Image (cartoon, rainbow, N blue to C red):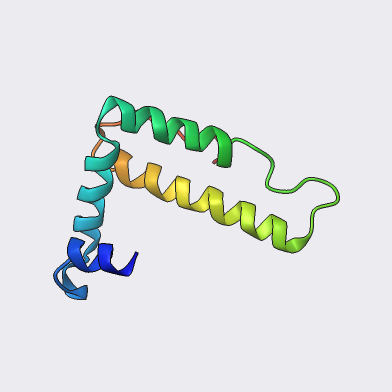
Length: 89
C-alpha cells in the first residue's frame, strides 16, 4: 500500500482535499463505481451499528466501516453530480 501511495502522489503536500475528491469522483464516477458504492452502503451503512451482545470492539469496527463509506458518499456528492443518499442522517 505504501508504494501505491508514493506512485499516486509525488509528495505529502500534493495529497490535498481537492485531489482526494478528484480521485474518489473519478473512481465512483462510472456506472459501475456508483453501483459499487451503493452496494457498500447497503452492506456497511444500512445496518444497525450495535446489536445486543456485541462487544465495544465490534461496535467500533462497524462504526468505522460505516464512517468510511459515508465519507466517500459525501465527497462524491459534493459537486451535485451523484444522487447517492445517506438515509442514516
